[in-house]
Amino acid sequence: MRRETTFVLAAVLAAPAFAAAEPVTVLYDDQVIEIARTLADPDDLWVVPADLPRVNGFELKPEGACLEELCVPVLQVRDSEMFVRRSGQAWFNVTALARRLEQAYVADHDHHVWSFGEVPVTRSRFLRSAMAPDFELPNREGELVRLSDFLGKKVLIVTWASW
Image: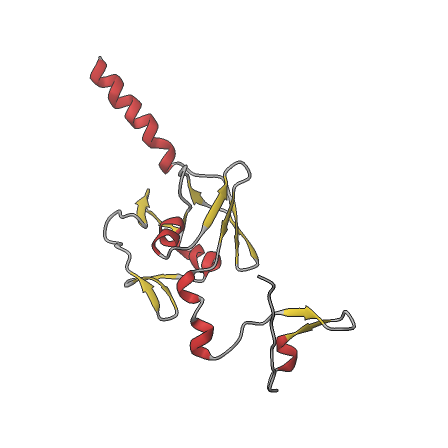
């Protein structure tokens, strides 16, 4: 009897990790992405691979999760930290990828919201391309001016900080 009770308890504890989860909202790169299907997990965000590009721009390919030339290997022939199959459906662990990339993230489980910070390894991409990120600031008249307003022109940017 004791052995059966232990087995049933283990099965009950494991079941929620593979049950269908509530839809979630993902915040990333100034975007709000609604994800209809996720795999229930108390610690991680699992999405169908087709949703991965909408979440963070990565695409699941045979060689791994790729964003342009950056590819993170993902074992897909059997269950792994970043990839599982449940009832014939493939699932990708977005938070495991974030941890691998040292990307900050936070979850509000009560409201089903996940927020992901910038991927650190992609921050230097604009240095290689010699393109400054677009931003906007008020001019002396208080009108918002974007850096992209000066596309094709030489621009001198002077910054100052009090610290």
